[in-house]
Length: 227
Ligand code: NDP
Image (tube, rainbow, N blue to C red; front, side, top):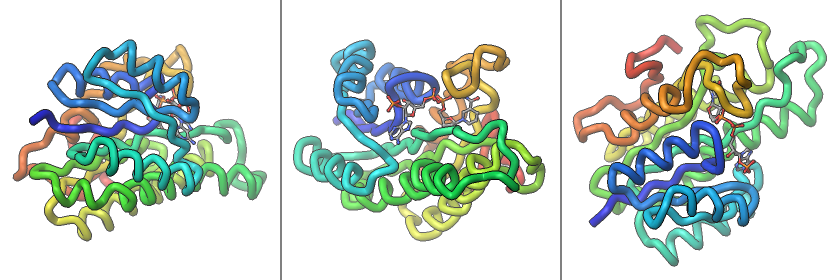
């Protein structure tokens, strides 16, 4: 039986590349976007191993609707890649961050991955090799934190804390955070040094870890990073 993988925010960028590579590795892949048509179009680009579905990770109702569909129609999940995220405050100061930007960013980038993991837990518990990869960022690393993108950076620090707690709560699974580096996407811009293939590498590695692989870590280029 093929492994089933869900990649949130996989209509473009790093998420699309991760979904494409998992399909090449013989997974059935669920591709998601906030738009049903966009998700379907992205899945069609990947081919018959992929199916598209609408999902807004900032909306608990959307997460529950999606998870109910997944449990009912697919009935299996082995790999969850929490990739969807927004970056709204690249040029803002922590002193000027608005409540709206902070709340929307935290809801999408940190709470969304937590609620998503909770919602699909029955399927992950049934998997022989459950893997959860939270796509984080070097911007969330406290030990090297600057004033860059305050809401975004804090959301990724929070996501890393969620990774540690989930790894402890789910000993049967391998749960890790990945930093893809600075990647040429809509979010990263065209001046970024890395391709989507390079950005996807550590995520794919963590999504396909062997049973004795690490859990509860934060990785960049397959190497463990400080928090
Ligand atoms: P993009 O902006 O290129 O793509 C973001 C994806 O997330 C899209 O597929 C988008 O889908 C989806 N998305 C956004 N908001 C939501 C939402 N509320 N619900 C569901 N899906 C949503 O980003 P990247 O590919 O660059 O980034 C992917 C991940 O890598 C993110 O977690 C990001 O923080 C991280 N990262 C990226 C870096 C970079 O340099 N690019 C650097 C470090 C980390 P749609 O609009 O179709 O709904």
